[in-house]
Image 1 (cartoon, one colour):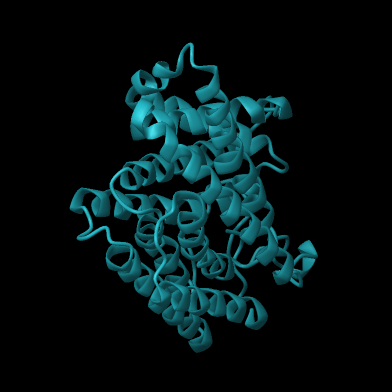
Image 2: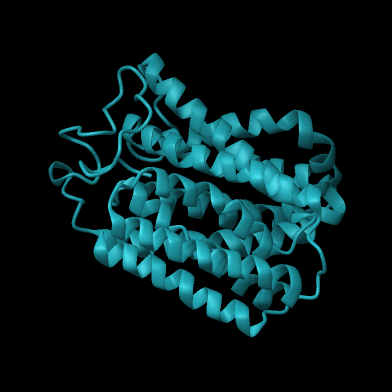
Length: 316
């Protein structure tokens, strides 16, 4: 883990000089001129695919934590994803300074979101970590909406994710949540909100996957001081390197590619609420892939969150 807002959306931070405006642009993504405003269902499918791939990748990452640590796994995830995306061979020659700023900010947001999330994931259950992290896009979605029905869907999503958090911390038998893990998840939440804004600008500034490839490389460079030592422990471990490559593809290449496509098809507020699928999918992945118990209250929470997502899509 964002497109341009519609005319009903409150003003957002001033766009980077030289980039298409986010508010009211004639060629804005999600506007009629872009030809994509009528495809909220497509955006929902893309986000669901992103959420599923991301959580499978997170489950793989947890298997690497004992060897690499959270920081090492994060560097491997972002760094290997950058290598895979290098086949795109982005044509950076001729990029304007404003395009570089947009893409580099996107890269920093990727590094921060992933780094602090994996730090939280090493201390919290998967569903609880994603639930807390999700406060970032939820807050952004609420801030960008003026219509009462949008606030209603956000409120319903909040109820769902808070219920998931309760189920993750008590129903799964994990006891009290680790405070450091909660803090890391909250910092990741802030970076996730930045990711949505920065990704919106980068997706418009640089078409195709070229911007994502450069952003992923920038994020990997930012993570080197923190994760190089842990990542180096995979040297001479081809079995774990295969696992790390799978993590990178499933947790970065696939979801970010799908989300960039979704960013071009839905208003930013709708994209933010659609991401409410994330904690639901995380709880399901924790149950299926990691054996983390899912209490009946968590299943009810999944229904609430998915209902909010469908409501925002059908009513957007």
